[in-house]
Image 1 (spheres, helix red, strand yellow):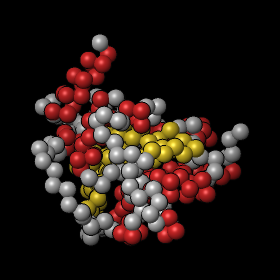
Image 2 (cartoon, rainbow, N blue to C red; image 1 turned 135 degrees about the vertical axis):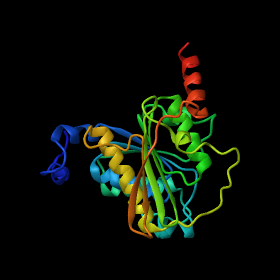
Image 3 (cartoon, rainbow, N blue to C red; image 1 turned 90 degrees about the horizontal axis):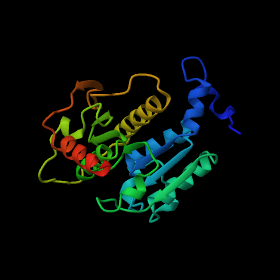
Image 4 (tube, rainbow, N blue to C red; image 1 turned 120 degrees about the vertical axis):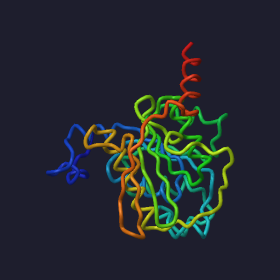
Length: 251
């Protein structure tokens, strides 16, 4: 029995329909990383009423996380982030099913993690991991909601394999990653994670205009939003490679 009282304001004028709310309640969303962006995404998905959320993260909560990772409580310092996130969701909305995987994904262990989910939300904090997710999404025809932050700035786009450009179409995957810790400010993290959750809402309900072939960029320092259009690059190594892999799987 679906409880609609909780989502009454979702259904008010200007919101979504009862049928769309039912779609959210029966949907499954995979959140990769439950740090800053992941915290905001999970909190918004739970508030919207997404019925099943899976969170994947290999790390434990550290003191430096609390400036932006709002889902974690200080009492959970040292605990696995996925356990902390699950506890928060269960306290907030016990009707939501939460699956967790405390694992660092790679090209060898990811398959069982992503199986059964249609949407991946990229909340990882390194671009090496983001490009790996991009390739996994292309390979298995999964929608990917990309988000990234650095200092006062952030970006969001929705990648639909075969229909839109991918992350490598926007910026070619570098040969070497120089992953250094960057400034992550809570207000910027909150803005970008909310926009990612909004993309999930639009994709699942079929309402609104998702950021397809559009990179939405936010500059919190100047209080500016800009949209950069892009297209599928016929010379993109990632698109061509993963399409070839996919065709071999089918044969």
